Image (tube, rainbow, N blue to C red; front, side, top):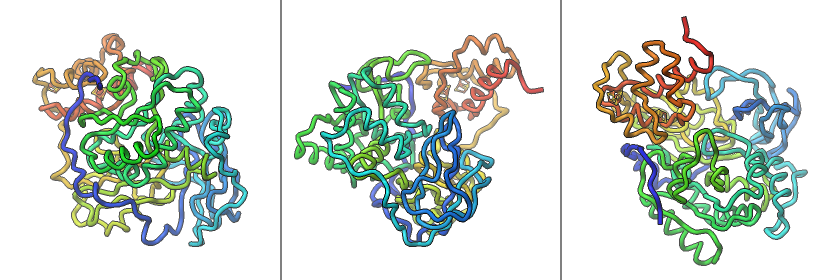
Length: 441
Ligand code: SF4
Ligand code: SF4
């Protein structure tokens, strides 16, 4: 039995142009990969290489820093040509390790040995995951070893999140369909190490081929992972909403799924975890959907992390129409791309190239008609219209009472607003004002 969560919206899925396209390697490998040292929000990684060094595929090129970050590994073999500032997909630039590929993908031979299921304890799993540089690949890029460390002894339900509720994106769908047996094995590994009483793989009912394929494998394996299909509703894939859907438990404000004895791992992260443990491989590649009405040949690609977005788009035949907006990580929660020279990082699941017709216009100056739709759609029980009004009136005291720190930036409020007010931006500005303790002059 599944439960429901409050709010949410039903955007058109727009996945038809890529959902049947298998994950494919780039037809010509990237000449250069750019590995930003800042991939985790909690701090930068520390480089282990310098310009001129020769590196092999899977070799560590940066380690976790004192404040956070994650290990980074060469995603091609070749020569380090620079450790310096390069464009970042989050905007602006950041220090990065730049590797010129030799086109040979020679593997690093000194990596850890593969382990078997029975050899792995939670301590060993955490260590392997940290060494392999595995992070949350569904967004946020937070180090997975930290999540495992915090989860020790606190979890009764493990949720494998294959709910890809953002429009256009099909990378996780293809991963589940094509590599389901590895994902099931990874789920069993996590379940065993965390001591979960139940393990549930959650996906939407519209991924029928992936659901059938996983169910077949599950029956053959006879494992403990339960499959749960739910109706698509955005933002089902957000951690708090998926916990509520599966267990009926509500994560407290400011809390995490661990507060209600749950741990949630994205399906791509589970794939990377089992790769690190059972094959001794670091996280060097990921699935990325390149799509949108402006793209000539939308596809799902399996690419080295660090590949410039431009190379992905070229592999899909470039643009067939003028592009109005470029986004990574989906149209609802994604980030606008400043430059196609920015690389794929560990949580980049898509590059969406929207035409003017596909893009819903926003009108900053438009007038609120007090319909209340934004309040009804907000899965976090917030009042975006009130936040917008308090922001315009520069009323910090009122803003402070609205619990805006709970906003998950899902974009439901902006999507549903008939006046096309960019509410998610207004809520973000209001939160910044609260953090600063005042408004911009
Ligand atoms: S206020 Fe935040 S959490 Fe609520 S709908 Fe808007 S973006 Fe989502
Ligand atoms: S959805 Fe838009 S128009 Fe309706 S109350 Fe919210 S801000 Fe106002």
